[in-house]
Image (cartoon, rainbow, N blue to C red):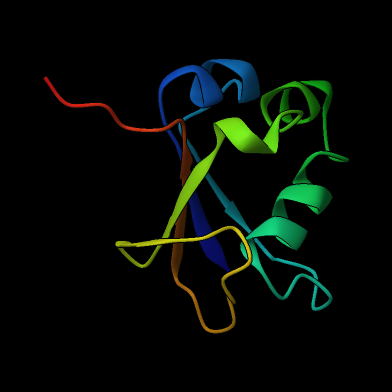
Amino acid sequence: MVRLLYFAWVREAVGTGEELLDIPPDCATVESLIDWLATTSEGHRAAFADRARLRAAVDGAFVPLDAPIEGAREIAIFPPVTGG
């Protein structure tokens, strides 16, 4: 099982900040995981509709959406982070 974390408006659209899921074996990258998640509910579909507005981290390290997820224990999906 993989812990999925969602932040900011992604969390609001999905309806939860965290899920614990068995990821299908054909989900090899963050992007393919997002594709699969978008099929699981209307909230997920809405949250993941615009990939340009998404960032990810795998086991605490920022990664591009084409990063592999094999062996990941935690995957976070969130909007771009801005500083001030």
